[in-house]
Picture 1 (cartoon, rainbow, N blue to C red):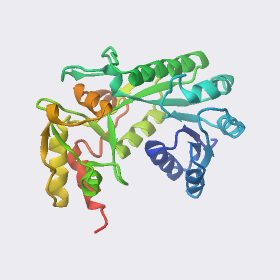
Picture 2: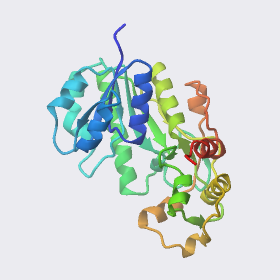
Picture 3: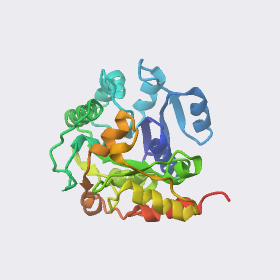
Picture 4: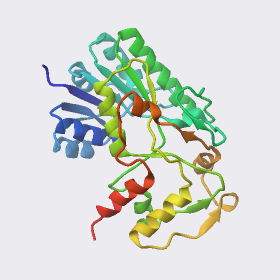
Length: 294
């Protein structure tokens, strides 16, 4: 059996963690990033990292795509569409049905505000921002490609991703960046990056063309509750509480707090057989705190 080969458009936080997991399973991995220095560092990990700025196509990328069996797309769309599709879509179309799996990382922001309701993947999207509207349009582009080329394509709708290496509320507390915003009734789901990787690998083992998955933990919780729990774990005082109405927030942050939803993750459990290693923020933050260097 040929060695599987993963190509990641976007070797960011999630893409790199997935690449590392795939290499550990004996896969070949290639992918893109914007910075030449980062590309060099990724190559030392066994990843064929290529510089791709999203503005012009790359012959090196085309060559690497030609040998891929699996494709992950995590680059956000821009005003003129999804850069991976815009610049390399024809290359992928020429592959026909030779890709065993395509995954697109989207956002639960495409649902818009749901008034705190529990929602699953059957909820009609209602994006409230231009960025989330672009995400929804990009979903359609990749699903259409999969349908036309008989390449099983999947959409993964993600809430906030957290994990080690500077991507948690623990790091925000330690750096002094954390803010404790109080908004009664407001809750958020989240997902640990390693659970997200588990979901992606499980989907690769069980392709289901056109399927959409909410990738979230079991317990939506208020942001200030999560922050205070993290503060206890590392033995610091949380920052002073500020009412949402009185907080000086960026337009992005203010909109973030304007939406409330509770995400059902039953589909990843029932269809992909996933058991979350970090089913709530408690397990995830405890693991991150335990890994901290004294």
